[in-house]
Length: 230
Image (cartoon, rainbow, N blue to C red; front, side, top):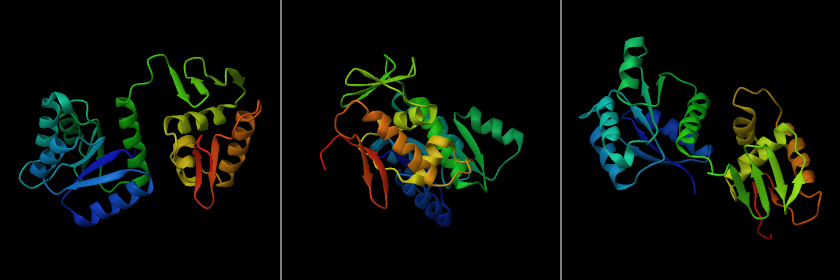
């Protein structure tokens, strides 16, 4: 299921740009053009995160953020404030209102999405036992070990990060560009074929002891962790 991001912004061109970049990166997008509409939408359908403009009609972004923090069901909802106000005092006011992060316009879409993932990740608790599970696969995040059908899988650091990402998002197809951003980081200057090399290594490690291939290649699209027969 795609994470839902509510964009609260009254500048239509900026909303269009944000929607395009977010949907390209696998997010679902909802919109609100003012603070009152934002609060109604959050009450109707709690999103996974909010991108919130400071200067809004009717109810300011600061007040929207304060009201989000006052309601128990949305108290931990990730909020990133978007604003042209870049002075230190403005940043402090934005963060004091309850925002998790503060991004000054104009901004890099890639950096914004990286920050968005970071605040969403912080609100998603790891498994209590520190173990991710999918099909016959187990990843112990504390011991940094992986097992398939009870047998150890020998992975390099990059393959471990790749497998962790897939295991946290089973069944979902990721393009090479998305994997570069999410596993290597959006600043990484690497060729797309780097992803293919590490996918081959990961697939070889996963299949070393037999069993069905858990990594599905979607031609011209990307890769997914998928145990279903195709």
